[in-house]
Image (tube, rainbow, N blue to C red; front, side, top):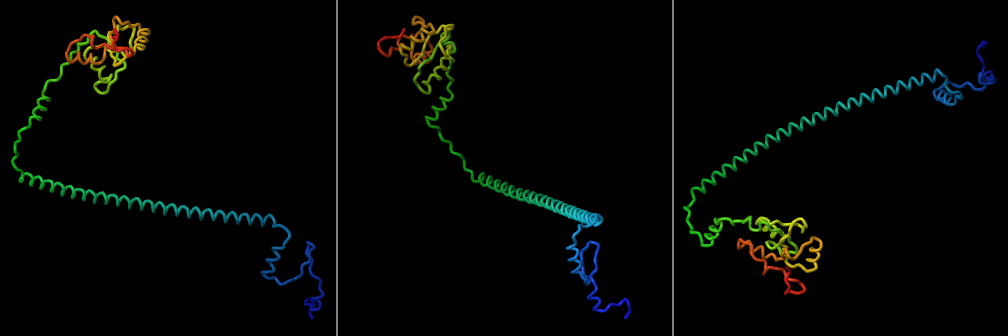
Length: 264
């Protein structure tokens, strides 16, 4: 036997190889499974060179991933832009076609309506009968004469120099205080919203005025019965209807407590 060859007995008795780590590792056949288990069981962390290489590989992989994702996003954006442009161009074409068809339909409808109206006018003119004159009734004549009657003349100097104060007017419409105030104003009277010491009040127009209220007005505003006359609203109406200032004797207000007493 050659010196390099060993018998099975010697190989069985040969001690296992020792590594510098002190770990005892028997010789086994180098297989893929054995190398994977060996690398997973290796107690020491990888060296600096291996760490650098692995980090470089990961960086390269991430850079490639980012570049591929950015390319995909650009492609997606370009596709979406193209799709939006296509949508709006198609929408514009559709709107133009709709407008054209609508204007055409409208002209047709309007033409038909105009032709129909012309035919109706022609038929009405051909079938028109001579009109019969009807004599107006007496009521219509009277209303026509009333409408042609001259307007009522307003005497703006009727109550000139007179100062009125309206209070406690009972009535609605033409009998209201607002209406009476307007009548007195347009016929020349001066209407005060409240009795004043500076203006010499001549008439107090009221529907009903208690003595207590008269006394209160006289005390506050220094109104005396000698120069102020308390009359009812009918005095203004009669003066306007007769176009002159009537005497106030039969239009003076009476006291609530005693109907025979006149306020003078």
